[in-house]
Length: 131
Image (cartoon, rainbow, N blue to C red; front, side, top):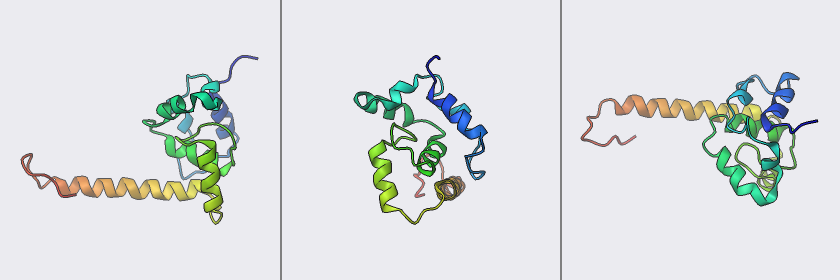
């Protein structure tokens, strides 16, 4: 059997219906890691490199939500290390669905960004928008 990329593993999980409807169920199609070898994300010596791949990824929230909901104990997912996720899970034992929580936070963030953009339209290019 050949090397399985991180996105292929996520695709199989997503197709089984494990990803919540609140976030994009096809998130793995847009993942920056989809063409990279999965070993990059499970090698502690290359953790910093894996985190760099995740940082600008547009589906980091979906990836993180899945890793937290599935209690993924190893590897880099959603721009986080296994240790970081373990600590977060220990602090937030009250969360029953990370998909729901992160989806709500993601939507609120988008809404706030939109409000700031709308409020800043009244300003000229010479004055700085306070938003």
